[in-house]
Length: 480
Image: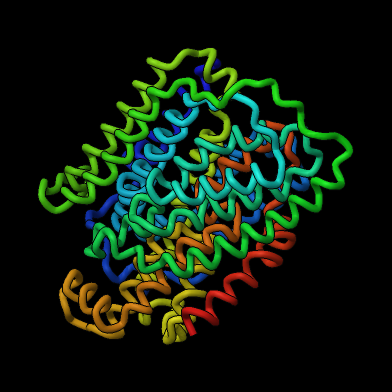
């Protein structure tokens, strides 16, 4: 297994911090609270640029994109960072350092650890891609995603899912529904499932409150699973071949000791939330980080390294494990995170920013569901969740301390928190960039020979056809 991509990945993890600490800036500052109110909408052009690059280059210039996507990501990051630093100097430098240290580095460490550990678990045996088997795999993946994270569940099951269906000619829709269910909807029940729910937990939402999202989650899952089964049964009947005859081998798990490392990752994430306010903070380059969060990141890196050291290379090779999917995510999201700084700051400014028209339009539960979800489809869903959680708190309990306001919201206006949480989690499935596992699964599927739709093809052929009508149904039932 070539280890050079691992070195490039580690370089990508350090890229943001290295750039931020060596970038030109003078003037101090911890970042201004009023920055979002000053920024014009045109500061979002680099963010739109990187999204369009992700959408169009793989379609129009696939060879160029495959070899140079990292350079394209760096171009758009610099297109934002350089004028941003010139215009806002110390404030801009602080924002760049903060988004890398507080958001990007923990984000990529979590993904890397889950990807590495899950890549050491090989499921073997007779597993034919029949409609019933495929349905069961999706049900299992959806069920465990809230407990091992959507990334953990996706990385555990996507390779067995692809191997089971290797004999099938039509596999694109199978992977898309896998992204819908395992990479997104399944993570709605606990803060371990998806980053926005974990962020809510850190800000005072009780750990098991998220079970309130169970009814809409069951409805979305039932609709999508039923549609998938009917589609899979239809195309299964049209297949010219038939699944390979069972060879009598039972299902086996090789590299099973990695389940302990996976449990270590989950425990580290959970404990960091429990101990978030108890262990204090540390200041690094002007950014306040929780000691528990730093400890979590160290533990996750250790779990990944232990997995690499203790798992036989042959297991990873038979699992068709490569570093490319996580490297692609690391490079692209390094650009996405920095270019979305102005957009997030404008949103955080609320009615004082240039997106006041959007904030002021959010009044009813259905507004919170669709606006949170719509923005989560293209922005990082964790800060988007927090923006509209704070919008609800400001509308109903202005001036009340955050944790008490959240408890008041749960007691008196719970439907609004449900709408924000459901929108952030469910609608991450609308695009490839809505949730990081979406990108990773797409990359793994393409390496396995599955022809995946383009960025816009995914939206037009699948999200608008299957997800949007389902979310309309959820709105009518739960969030009117």
